[in-house]
Amino acid sequence: MVEYSHADDELVRQPIVYWAWAANKTLMAYVRGRLASIGVTQPQWWVLNQAVHSPDGITREEAISANQMNLDVGAGLAPDIDLLVERGMLARGEDDRLRITDEGRALHQRAAETQRRNRGVVHAGISDEEYLTTLKVLQRMIHNAGGDVSALGA
Image 1: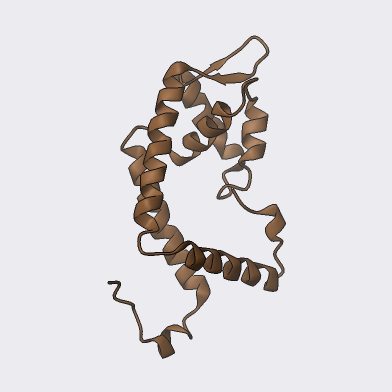
Image 2: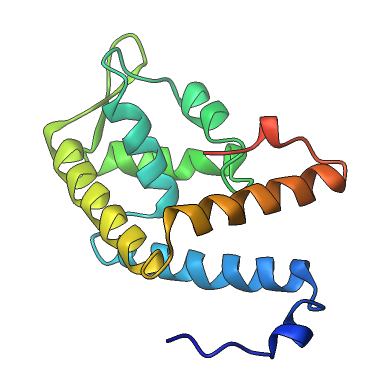
């Protein structure tokens, strides 16, 4: 059973910005720590996941562009891409496209399983209905604050 920080009548007056930040900070540390334990960063996981689903390979620019909205990583992804090439997880072809190697597939598989376990732990005791409601409320708040949720998402 979760012990909440405040009684309901107090919690309802708490600022969403604080709790969204606290959730982000806690969940990012959790996910990134679990991925680090198998030797991959979260941005590297994003690139491997993109590469495994791209039979013709990806360019650096495509990887950076596709991940531009992932926590504002943008061009900061370049060193992670370089490390994946150096580690032999991605191979650069003569066409300059990056293709996942067998070693990269094995790491991707471990990372995908880690992410499945992460989701199971983080979502424990939370129904799909509660989760969906939470995301829709957050998206309405983004919209209400002038944001465009169509440009967001993983």
